[in-house]
Length: 257
Image 1 (tube, one colour):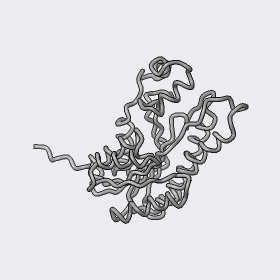
Image 2 (cartoon, rainbow, N blue to C red; image 1 turned 135 degrees about the horizontal axis):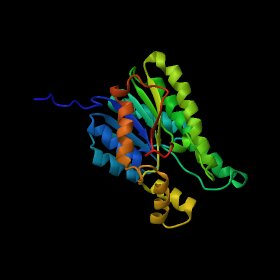
Image 3 (tube, helix red, strand yellow; image 1 turned 90 degrees about the vertical axis):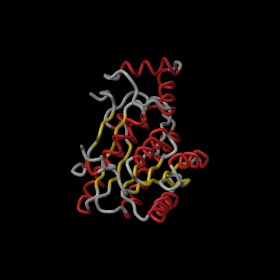
Image 4 (cartoon, rainbow, N blue to C red; image 1 turned 135 degrees about the vertical axis):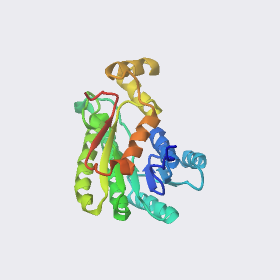
């Protein structure tokens, strides 16, 4: 008889920003299923309360936090440690898209907002989490397939997602002597509201028609499910990836080939 499989994240404690969204909540669910305790942070208190209730009060906590605010990010990290006693993993997942527009016409205020959430937000999570993270820990930054490629009209989003790769690689070198790993994940189009809004704006057709256009560009000919992205995050958080740091893990159905 084979030995019973051990949870991949047994006794680990994680902080997930953007935790009430599609990928964030799927990741929190996957973490809990693998034995972790999690604190999910987001802007929507109602969504956070509902999500934490579904995850289980003994395994999950929540905090309202704007990732562009250093004090709120610090507070979320502190709350995680106070509630669960330690921090082993942080998933900097909160993000916004912006608009579709040529570089020469891109609104400066929108560009600045995207950079604030996606880049400064990831930096603040890294800054706060890495100060208290346990040796053997893992920081994961959610970039995007367009953090490795790009396309017309997405100047703010692509720029921000490329920028966090630089943050990741710097932190990976700094934290390696402490036994803490830092990697980025690069999802392709995922079946959620965030992605479908992007597709509708980019293509200018219905949700179904816009999704079909995107799927024609993906070698595997479909969108990812949020749980598929979550499983890749579990891998980066687990000891299965303990010799990986400074890595850009692409989960995009072949879009970046």
